[in-house]
Image (cartoon, rainbow, N blue to C red; front, side, top):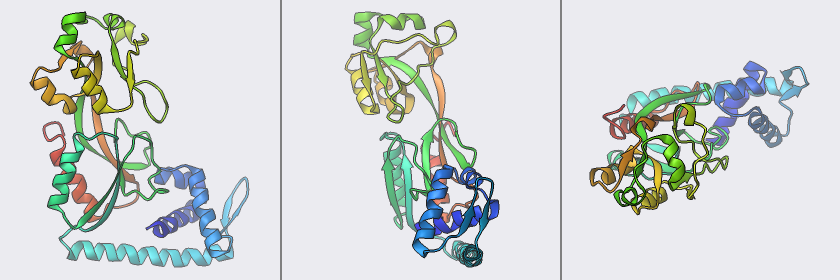
Length: 294
């Protein structure tokens, strides 16, 4: 699979004559494209491109390798089309990167595996932004908008982020009536592992930029839920993860106007038609993650 990705990258660079343009198409950095080409050249012991500050051109060896690469990729594409028509059973390995959360994914992933036992799931739970091509992922699932338009994406579902706390906490400290009241409360905050920055809470208007107290900071969703239920303070949490606690009145929503809609998307490299195993995976997640909000 890594070799096929390298061939695809090589052909794209040969066609665009640009590491930057290829990186945009595939959703990776130009340096990652350059490293992939360098590894190919090292593997075969030849220079495939002549590089200058103004242009990239194929060498004679590169021209010959391009013709072979096009034939190889053409055969693979034909085989995929043939197998997708003749086989109705999705099978093979799916390497997927997911956010570092258990809900709502774990139960749905278990259901998917039971439904499609011939699909082998290779799952990585990590909040960092992975390099899809370079690291060999079939797809990634992330919250929020797609920062790179070169990645093809599909909406998996919508959910609400809300401010919540335990009844015992509010009984002791009072219920905030406006965003500014949060300055007098214990706030359980989330720190992004990639940037080290704290997650912003959706406070509106003139209070949007106030510095909230950092009574407790976590980089884990389950920990924040536990601390909120235990009455440590107010937390900003997704509704799907706290629905049982809300239904049992173990958590209460406050400052309803500060709730914020979010989305989960699945993304894969543009220009790649998803294989049958990925198509059924996408459809299954869309049907079972947030069926009422999709």
